[in-house]
Image 1 (spheres, rainbow, N blue to C red):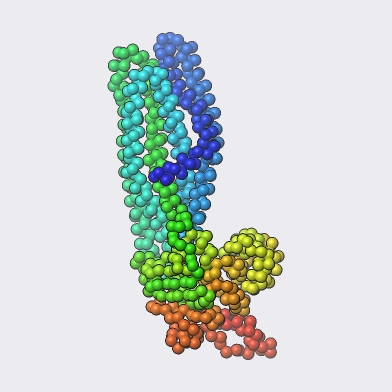
Image 2: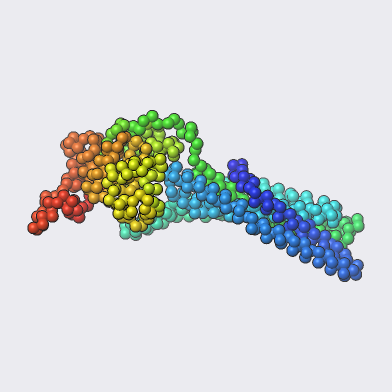
Length: 584
């Protein structure tokens, strides 16, 4: 909790907080005056001094107008205090998601939890400020009115307030459970919604309902626990809010016997009913609800989004050789492993192709090598260091991965191509564009300085830009995870040969036999074990590889007419793509 409180204290140390405190001072005046005004006006009216009584009430109205001016400036300054905190938290969540390569929980934190912290922090600033102003004003007014009345009212009020603070510790764990249940429900519902068509087609509605039902029940149980804590807060309010009034009424004859006037007694009750009770109720509700949500939610964001400093994860990589030792990976504690006891060494300068049927674990292997996933069992190392523990900057300097769905953002061609190597010169940029085979595309869109939008590019064009960006990267290990699947075979050949000639190592998740034939070594994944070898050895040693090559093989040319289009290699490649759906 100390860490979360430090974040809040740091936020209120900004200059708007000082102005906020300054404009809170005018609000103390009406709070301190209304009990006095009621007491003196009552005594004046009882004594027949109507003008004196009206004057006191008029002064109360003037004080209220003066306090309203302060409240107006308080709300104007609140945004300047809160919005910088929200921006800081958004940066933390995004940085943590990029570091951990996890979007599911980050989406819940970004869409809901950051807004919870923002709103609760703003509410807490207002409530605590108002509570402090009210208590200072009421205590000042009570002491001015009658120290004896103040001695009867203030102690039980403080007792109730301190008891409410003691309930917070009990409630904190239950709020954490509620937030955890919220994230688990968001993840489970997202999985079910993403596969809703497949679930409907296969009759898996009951399975999906069971998948989402348990997180729903857990969240409901957590909310019921929070309701029980709310009942305890009601008891604390009864002690701090109603007990002072009961004591004051019970002691009224005793007070009157010691010279306390009826107006003074009524003024003390006014301070309790219109000052202390609303202030205590508001601050208890805020601390018990918004305060806990602020602390727990902010703690959740900081726990999952803070990027560790370098030195906590180990030494720098020495080289870029890849080693997997008895690596297994499963998507969940009860799921069947996608990879099982895999041993693999990719030495520096190697060119490896990974092949296998769709869903066999090729992209999972790429994620493990690049540090985007952590193995369930075994160890993955890059240059002798586990990639998952490297800081983002060191990991980016060691490897670059290009997925099937290429990332392109709205901006210039140069910005899209050079953000992994912002020191690249114009000559290096032109050389990379030429080497990867993107020259025609760059000329078509208007050159390196031209603005591009992802929606205006085809999937293959986005892949070409991503490949050029990766080629420019200083990382010595390049992993192409079906990064050329939308390109024509000839364009794919140019790009892969450029990466093969680039200094460093190349791992290609292959979707065409040509990618495997260009590699020095080929890794075949078949679900039960993996076989590593050359094209010729695998044809005889791996039935699966021979089957894949046969599936990928080009059919015999078909004469289609006088133009002999089937003898054109580019046309043959088009015919092959139309006639054969390759396994990925």
